[in-house]
Length: 344
Ligand SMILES: [Zn+2]
Image 1 (spheres, helix red, strand yellow):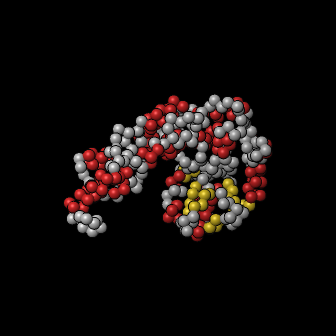
Image 2 (cartoon, protein in one colour):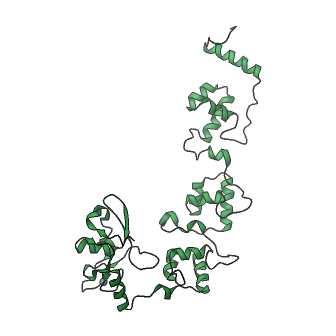
Image 3 (cartoon, helix red, strand yellow):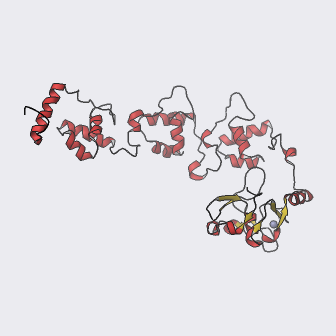
């Protein structure tokens, strides 16, 4: 939270801040009522609002909105090791005249005076983590598997997201046979919204994803069909999550790597098929090379079924050396190449 470093208004990029601050503060209270922050909060220990701003150099600074409000309304500086206290005892309040500059000691004493301070050790175990019961742990696991987010659960159980994650991943309150569903792709904090919509996959769906991928569906299509992000599909296919001993498929091998998903490839499957057809019709390497804008080697590998592998395609058997020689001579005659070959 960079509290100990202090903050100077002059260092901050106010353009970046824009409307981020005031449009998330409910300033409707007119009779000395609190102006509460409506945006994101820090999860974990305190219940302050959370806001990200930028310095003029573009360095992100995460802090709390009431501190920014204080900077904007009370002289532009919070010295190092000072904090912004609330006369109203409401950590979300951003009303300028409810804020005052104090030391940590002031803040602490103020809290204790107002009966708000609850020592961590009283609340939790050794690590300042809220003490949970087995019942609560079970409830967290069940509710997580029903689709609640880790942040929401941390809030509901007065714990931290990190702690909830450890419970969900069976790192704490360990049980031998976890029967809840570990949505292991989704443990990281901060990734929200569409990208991380917490869709819960079942083993059945995972099997189906692998099966359909094997049959040729694209990862992107599968991600859409199952409402998860592309990375999730990729992890499943590579057997990095929902690990099984004998995966149906871990990738489509060469065909896949060299195929449509490879942005550097100039060919597509359809083009490769066309090359094979045209070759059968008598097109030469040179003609194919020019038509498709690729190297002769690529044409050669396509025709030998070493790239863009097509199981139904039977490559032409290798041409015997003697035959190759005759072809070369014929080619040179037809194209008027004179040098290098004696006797013609
Ligand atoms: Zn207030």
